[in-house]
Length: 269
Ligand code: GLN
Image 1 (cartoon, protein in one colour):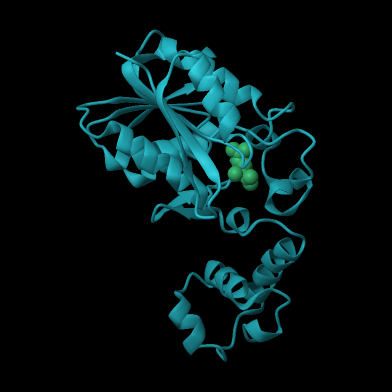
Image 2 (tube, helix red, strand yellow):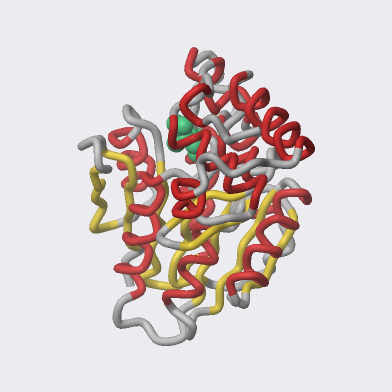
């Protein structure tokens, strides 16, 4: 048997990624050993993964990992797959922390922990707290923190309802569920396999963003920053929410596609 990547119904890159998973070899090995005889059980293992991919399952769930800001994060179907767009949220959050020593950071709805762990690793002096309503997600996030060597605190609960206590943060970040419940994208591509509660609020797409922005002033210290990811058409609404809650220096940042994707605001002193 051979890897027969050329005969696969999958794009060459995906077939290679699945073979690497099955054989535990680097890409260069596959290229050099395309004719290498393979044990039948390896071929069966590959075919199982290939069938999952052909059925539409996201590569990240089949491989059990996805790269985010240059690091491999473990992902399971209990967590949203980290997106390149969300790297913008981390960058904006880190900019807000510039000049603050030993800052306290809160990541609401951490999922795989990609945002919280990335911030903790970039700012080892920060005290980072991450929450999620899903206990299964928190386990994945804790596992990622351990594997990547970040030290974080985790709380189980909904937005500010978890056992946060009265701590005041320098920065609150979140990539909450913001897709409208009736958005047809929920029935397409990777989103079909991702946790519904991580994608949509089951309403107009703004209810989680509203809860996060509304609760932020009582959990931020003076001049603290709230920074959220949102949908392609929500930047104006999020800026309004922040304005109504008394935030200053409100601004939105564009993602790689030129779409306003992240909005932040600062509490006055
Ligand atoms: N950015 C994701 C998407 O549109 C949605 C993630 C979210 O709701 N936070 O695919």
